Length: 315
View (cartoon, rainbow, N blue to C red):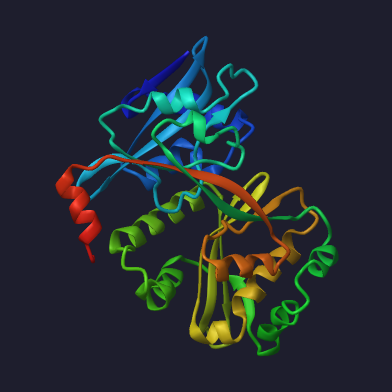
């Protein structure tokens, strides 16, 4: 039986047990992660004998003052999570239970939610997106040989300049590095989002899911840094940045190559978290990462004045 549940009615223990048991299990869908990245989230749940056997999270947020179901920051994929006891494995019945009051919907599903077609998603618009995965099961030499030939020498430049990969004790230097570089171009990324990332890191660290790495010289100058998130079958590149000097020294290539060396031979996948930006996607492909598709769903019914504002806004 499928039920829509508002946040205060969700049994978080039953929820997390379902996510863990699901074939699509990922860190983004745990109750503690969702409760960190958004103030409130509701859900559609399939329940049998008091046990959650399928869950479909509905994170809530505001856009232009309107409350809707919106994909949170630092949460690449959500969607439907099903277990062996699930009897409802298709997405349309879950989508149909999203309350009508949420006129604005934007969700990114997970890579296993592949049963959607244009004919069964109603008013939703579907767009294919892509992430990049690298199988870490082979040894490092095998992984390294699959780097693009022109890419391999780049992983050697930073150590040749005396730079080292080592743990980063706290996330603030990574945030400040991003603010001073790419952050200047991203006007939609506000102070609240950096605070959110800092809080998320603390939660991940508390649960022994976080790994912070940096590339620095002997004087401690930061060239690149990255936040990795660990789950049993996957390592996720959640957030990263390089300085201008770091880009010239190929510091991020060195950092990621050190991760491949460290975790090669483990039964895990390295998830670069993909990108729809061709240059970034190419960067991940340089490491031998394979594109893995997933989809986003969008539905937007704005009052005429909000739609007008949306079209004419320059903010």
